Amino acid sequence: MTVSNTVDQYTIMSGDRSKIKDLLCNRLTECGWRDEVRLLCRNILLEKSNSSNGVTVEQLIAEVTPKARTLVPDAVKKELLMKIRTILAENEAEN
Image 1 (cartoon, rainbow, N blue to C red):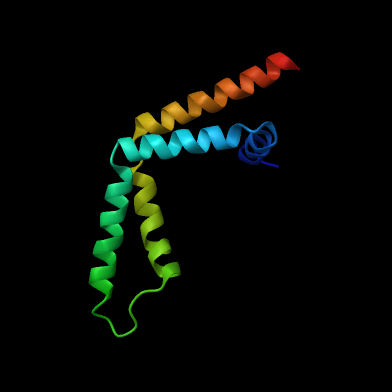
Image 2: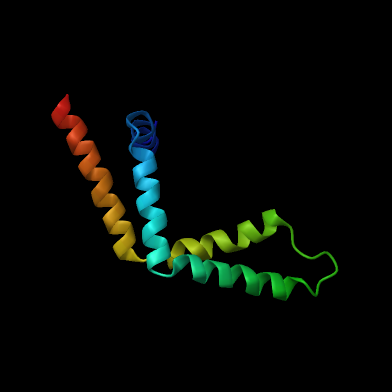
């Protein structure tokens, strides 16, 4: 089991996963990431709409996901990492 899986399982069991998820959603909205990804999706759909097959949801996700991940600001990543570390530290202190 990887560290990522272990952290994921712990946050699910402790109920902290929803807090982390809410924090991430709020920060991504605040920094304009969601709007950037929405625009990216629109542009891809416009580009592909002229093709005979169009684009499937799976194709759109495959194309957008790597680009969207690179658009997440470092400050958001650092804040989430700090939050996860705090949660894990609190867990260790309890045990």
